[in-house]
Amino acid sequence: MFGAYNFQNILACFAYSMIWKKPYSETFEKIKKFKGAAGRLEPITLNKLKVFIDYAHTPDALEKSLKAIRSEYANHTIILVFGCGGNRDISKRSKMGTIAERYSDFIILTNDNPRYETPIKIIRDIKRGIKSRNKVVTIINREKAIISGLKKLNNKSVILIAGKGHEDYQEINGEKISFSDHNVVKNFIENESI
Image (cartoon, rainbow, N blue to C red; front, side, top):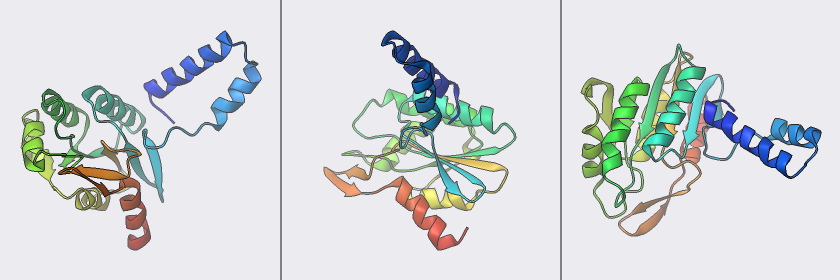
């Protein structure tokens, strides 16, 4: 685990254990064993290549995740795959586009949980926050978008797949369709023999 917010969470846990007078040694052991929450800047093993899946679906969360990756992998190219949920706060979409442009080098905009909105309309809203259009591509199909990003990886790049994290579905037109970013990455690893 890395990133300032993870350190802050660990400090909060430590403070909580002090309040409840837990033994320091017990707290330290639990902190050492904790590998992080599923879908929260979660590293996926892809040989020596760097893949992270994160639930970041707000401007603040996306910025924190990208900043953490940027500080840990300062000399790497950051590839970001993300979208925004439909029928939710429209104002955050362009903000997330601006953050994506500021902290990543290549952006793949895709489908998230569009619900009852059209994915292309959501992506247009995100693009309003992105000035440099030459660093962004649109691939509506989320699986294809993730695979496209994974194919760009090399030992000097990192990919962040953001927005869904631990979720194992997509909400499209009132239906929950089975879908997992983890499974897409896992299948890619198995099929590409990386």
